[in-house]
Length: 221
Image (tube, rainbow, N blue to C red; front, side, top):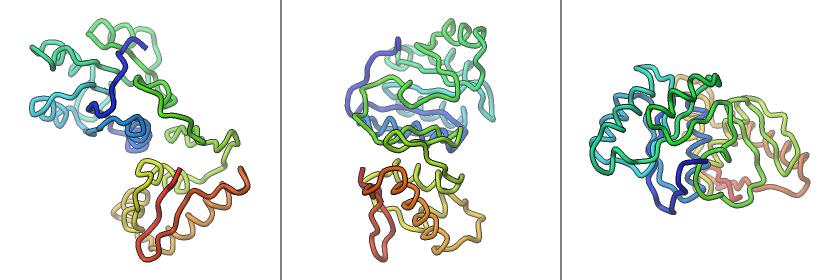
């Protein structure tokens, strides 16, 4: 990758409107010791850039309120630190023209979706037992493919994103099922149970999901 390597504690501004892709990227970057601020819209990203420029900008091309290429152009017009920060473009379009345009506008690199989090610049996160493509709903554990439902994958991604921290059932319900869902705590428990079974089938003896009675669950990977 042409973007420079990042240091532990560096700040990243992620502009991505797909929650599943954003969760995967945030998980990968935070495991590398980076501090991530996530924006869904260009308007929010512009305010964040004006308030406190990050060390790195990870920018989707197609956003609800405009084109990320426009923001890349604006960033390169800034003076000082903000104008020289590394920019990594993300896009669902793989055409060479899109890539060339992004690089001509000043992006340091360009990654087409779907992609592995390993494609992102920065230090390696160490050896992980998981290979995840949340957007494509594919995941493997210790080299073994897991046949997960969309909700099981959502629970797994959330726990890994917040690894080492307790996630209450309410947290998981909001993140995975959504605010309008009428699912209950029992629904979360059931999906945790089936997820554990599938992890055990893929790698017998592996159980990194910890139950905290009366509190919720955490991932200890």
